[in-house]
Length: 165
Image 1 (cartoon, rainbow, N blue to C red):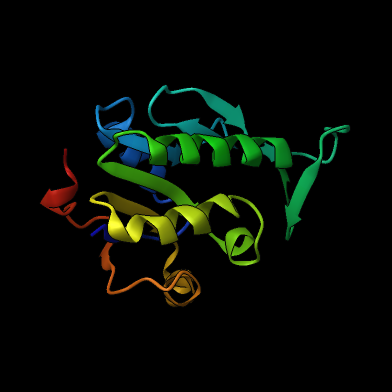
Image 2 (spheres, rainbow, N blue to C red):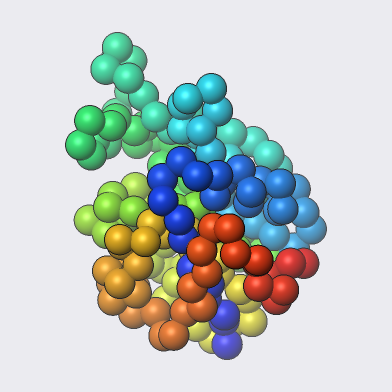
């Protein structure tokens, strides 16, 4: 049975940066991160370190975009992120990280539908899922994805030892 962890903290406090330090290119770890690099949000494949620009500005024409509030994101990069999540899920990884589940995913966009498939398929597998979720969205994420008693820990707390591979 999978173990599900929710890592939470407010925007911009270093969650993705810490995850990069702990898990980037580590054996038996897969998934994606969403760090800000030079003020721009990217998707980074944990296994390879490959990154793709996620956040766009209004001057970047020609790209298919997904918007939420004042933010524009690359639909192509989200599709790439979904593929990277699917690849990581079907490999032999013992820890799968999804940074992050937010309003886009809760509305069926962003990393969806791959995310729902992975979470629902993980129930019978012996993997650990580490989901990054902002505090105000935890309850909604737990309900939306039907998570059964996830272990929630906050940025600044010690990482659960079971996650350190």
